[in-house]
Image 1 (cartoon, rainbow, N blue to C red):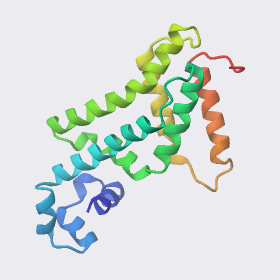
Image 2 (cartoon, rainbow, N blue to C red; image 1 turned 30 degrees about the vertical axis):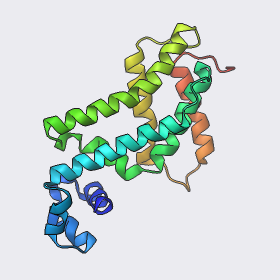
Image 3 (cartoon, rainbow, N blue to C red; image 1 turned 45 degrees about the vertical axis):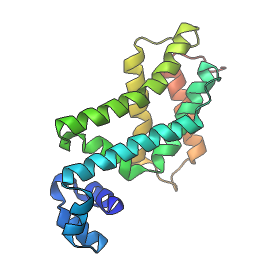
Length: 185
């Protein structure tokens, strides 16, 4: 059900997809979906919560807290790119359908997003504190980095001009420039 909903929401948008369409996609009766999700809003909320909790768990497993700020930032960039490229439908839904969440559900997702945003922000603040980075505003810089990295999910293609490794290298250089880090670091 979740997979069918993700596919349909990504293709047609949350507002245009009915629970009957999701049921038809999965081959079950619409009533069966309601046994798991009382409303389409519950289903959307569940998809976004699972996406964010899985992202936070994946970072917790990948985190290397002893890295110096410049190495930690590079590690975060690589993690974010790879994780999000593997989940482009979930990323699309989590950005495009925030507007469809009811206030209470939006608050839950916003809290989870802030937890993830705290990761690069902490790296940036450590780097600013030790002189590794020259940042005007850590929060805005955090949001700019996340938006730039996540944006790859809209244009990246495996058969493109550059390999994923080459694109990552470019993005790392761009992020270094954004935080005022010298190239030789």
